[in-house]
Image (cartoon, rainbow, N blue to C red; front, side, top):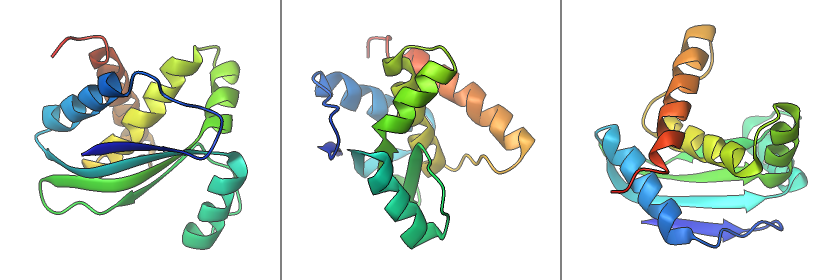
Length: 139
């Protein structure tokens, strides 16, 4: 089950479209959907999580907590909507496109993709682009 929680100003109005898309991302990677919660929050909220759980004192756009069990994907995906907005401006892309990139990024982490070295980052970016394009594909 995919659920959305809002602790910032953003609200996703077409939730069923996003739920369907995320389900298809997970299935396209050969996994099953467990419980995936997206928490849309502020920079400050995510900074506190970053400090408390990861001992990082930096702003970030996403933190993913993985509770997956084998092929069943579960986790909490915290997204700073303020960072998403800043990154959209910085990279001159539409806010929703950047939001979808970050949302797919979190799910890709849950399916085993990393982003710690240059090769992993390159593959992650390719996968993000592939998954963003899936948003417009009918099931």
